[in-house]
Image (tube, rainbow, N blue to C red; front, side, top):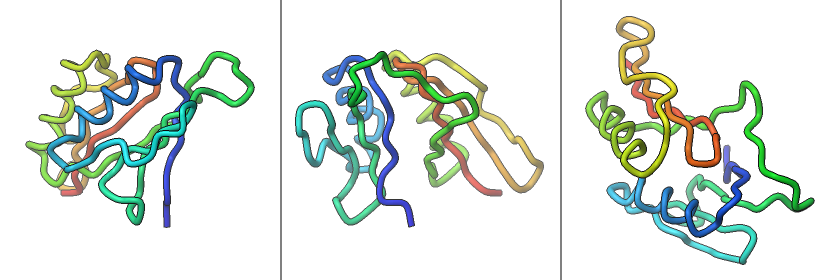
Length: 123
């Protein structure tokens, strides 16, 4: 049901590099780049992340309580995405770990613009 989620960014080149490199192992890349907005994903037919300089040209600000969650495929891959994000300039916002025993494993970061991301696995 989700086509894409838009994240405000201050530096398009930095954001495109961050998300392309973060999800390179999932075959994600910049699929469409229109200057102030770029779509990163596997294909235009699957959910994507849109990186966007705000239309009003004000500074991008992450929403309080807003988070984009990415299915990792396994607990190990969630931890690996967390580590990769940190190596690309993200900050830790929750170490990888079991959040709900037997049901939910998550790892949390803030991208270089402060947007909160989760990498998760059910189980």
